[in-house]
Amino acid sequence: MTELAHPPAETAEEIATIGHWIGGRPVRGTSGRSGPVFNPATGRQSGEVGFASVEEVDAAVAAAKEAFATWRAVSLSKRVDILFRIRELVHDRREEIARILTAEHGKVLSDALGEVTRGLEVIEFACGIPTLLKGGFSEQVSSGVDVYSIRQPLGVVAGITPFNFAAMVPMWMWPPAIACGNTFVLKPSEKDPSASLYVAELLQEAGLPDGVFNVVQGDKVAVDRILEHAEIAAVSFVGSTPIARYVYETGTRNGKRVQALGGAKNHMIVLPDADVDMAADAAVSAGYGSAGERCMAVSVVVAVGDVGDPLVDAIRERLPKVRVGDGLDPASEMGPLITREHRDKVASYLDKGRDQGATIVADGRKTAPDGDGFFLGVSLLDNVEPGTDCYRDEIFGPVLSVVRAETYDEAVGLVNENPYGNGVALFTRDGGAARRFQFDVEAGMVGINVPIPVPVAYYSFGGWKSSLFGDLHAYGPESIQFYTHGKVVTSRWPDPATSKVDLGFPQTR
Ligand code: NAD
Image (tube, rainbow, N blue to C red; front, side, top):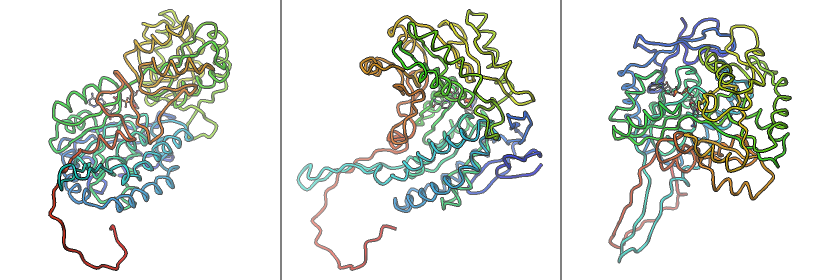
């Protein structure tokens, strides 16, 4: 086997050994435990990723702890300097990052590039850290006494991330975390571990001191060590709801600050007055983009009143035009799923749906490309009943369900009764209905004629109910709160009578 910090994306015929990044250098895994990494478009194994032992996690935390003492003291202007260089390098190498994502995740290259771009926006947000960290000041609260507030970094913080956005979701976490002066230990998904190692190299090239950003690969052993390690102050998690709940409960029990973003079942409600073509375009884009493996994917279309038949017809017409294939082929619009097991599980919902009363309008098992890739074609179920498996479960694949509802109230009731509350969308021409909807609906991110309402980087991202455990959302202003402690200083000084002359231009570095 060849050892590489990150495997070549396209031509890997050999199986690359994928390790960790600790203290500014690649580290080969020594635990003796590992897992396979596949190219989902071909079904071939491309890598073998080492799973960290407790000692390997401890080594990463020790490197981060050592780096913290100096990193927190680096001036804001120097930190911004490094962040700008990180921004430039990630921007310049976005194509390379996207190719690594496509090779291990399977999403089409244009989608992978879009993912990197959304991550870049968070890096750009973090470049504004001097403004974001500004505190308050109250003069003369008492005679000769002033009060001011400051925000200080927590120390070593960790991120645990899912397979579906192997570059962007870590970028929701580490840019604000390190901009605030923390040091970071990332545990990426073991299914597509290489993008984080490539990014680690870029951060070093940008001048980030060794130990500020570390990567440990692994599974539950690494996650559990992160959750119990006394030197880790806070954990950001993104993944499925059962693991998010576990991470939140275990991490907080061990005294850590935790934000744990979970799964989703995103509804798109279409009112009778909606523009049917616009709604159908949106349903297809948001239902099948990235093969439905997005936490903000639309998985249920709720057709209200008589819009149901024309809407299902319009969606059905569009499906044969969706080109499914290898994500590196520029003609492909939708790639494979992440693993063979996941593809088979997703496909099983078609028979389950039919057995529980739904109509299979499009069966992706019949339209998947030939070969050993983990493909499933676009699939559509109509007349799905709430309470059935297809309606209840987060399928996380290219299976879109249509539920028919009589009224607006019935449709909103479905969303509000759902245990998840990540994203939701309403399609209508009626501004009054839209305004009522944003008031009524119980979800964290709401789209009005926008099917995937992922907030821009200067707002924060997060759902309600079982889609988020914790108080603060990811990135944006809430991330600055999450990654810092507040401190309030009350001060009194004797009047200064000293001063000196210095004609030099004031320096900050
Ligand atoms: P996952 O929960 O299986 O894995 C997420 C992380 O947890 C990975 O790093 C994994 O190694 C680790 N993990 C898995 N099982 C574990 C266990 N038993 N104990 C400890 N750690 C464990 O999620 P996934 O399959 O990688 O990603 C898909 C899920 O993530 C979907 O449910 C999707 O909705 C969700 N997601 C949510 C958001 C959001 O913002 N809410 C964003 C992206 C993905």
